[in-house]
Image 1: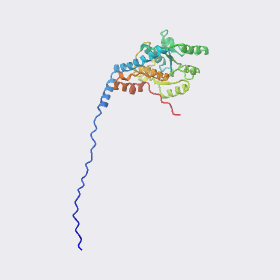
Image 2: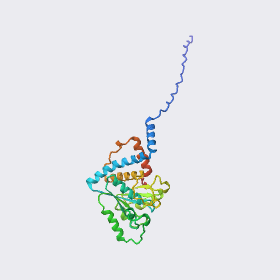
Image 3: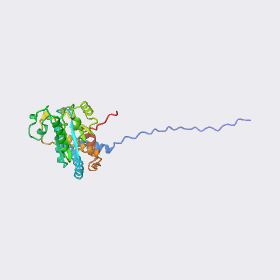
Image 4: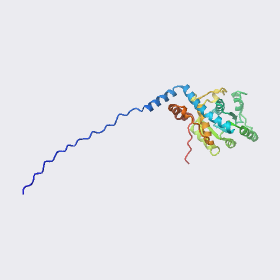
Length: 284
């Protein structure tokens, strides 16, 4: 019996699949436009001032309406070592917020010096005299005077000595503390001091080597009673109002509809980061 011949096998050609090449990355027009608009704002100092001022005006309007309805009082205290610019900052914040229509007042919580008289124009900054013979009664009367102010935002100018034995009593009167420091090391020292004595706090940096962008020190420039609308002051005051509204459970105003995406980015991601960075508590 013969072997049947198998039919010839067809040759199968294996075609190599062409590898799909990744498409060329297309530029994101939105990000390009956003980046360009942000750069344009940052290059123009007047735009920065206008932007920070516009946000503060919208926030202040809501706060003003709240005070008109409730007659509430918010107390803010500025703490920090001597010669960090506490008086200049405290006075400027109080005056600027008042210009924006919110009841606002400066108060000198430091009876050891004449900063309150200097800020009122009664004496020059160089005529201040430090006192060490302050009685306990005088100090508590000073604190009571701070508490006696009703309605609006009251800005307290604290003594600079971190070991002052009466700081706990002053801090207990506050709704919010502002730590004004030259370095993170100073910030940590004041955080330890105020821990457990105040409901909430934020911190800002004063650096004499960056006079153009940071808070001026009165010991270098003498105290000027002419309020200057610095961007950092406007950002700080807005942050203070937002913090206090949050602590009171007050709904925050819907303001971002009045800003472009670039303007919001400049405010939240750049100016706030530079001037009023968030405090991140330790996970202990």
